[in-house]
Amino acid sequence: MKAALFDTSILIDYLKDKPEATSLLDHCLKEGQILTCSLLTKVELLSGARQGEEKVLQDFLDAFDRIGLDDNITEAAGRYMSLYRKSHGINTADAIIAASTLVRGAVLYTLNERHFPMNDIKVKKPY
Image (cartoon, one colour):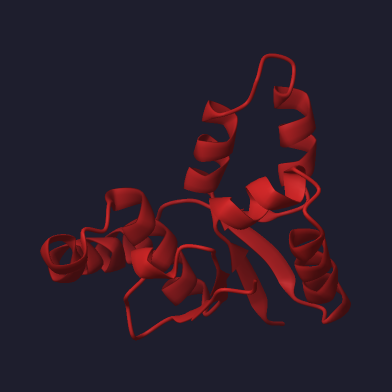
């Protein structure tokens, strides 16, 4: 089964009821894709939550296969940082999300394509 990995930007739009994000997640589910996100996305979402929103976010994120760090992801992220930090200004979080995409063989959905210049992963800006 194919995996769809969602960057924080898409999930924020979904939580704000943006129709494009809702349609995207619905489409991926209908296609039978596994909905995934990095645990770093969970950190980013929780860090922006207002008091009282944490439970809603936890329930929402329970629908996703959350990808943590392992040796394969950390090694790939380190390579990405070495290759793209100076030339493209990527940060550690983006490197880990890209590495998670690579290791899982997923498609990365993001609104920030410039954060993911890697040519060995599939990146889609859906809207």
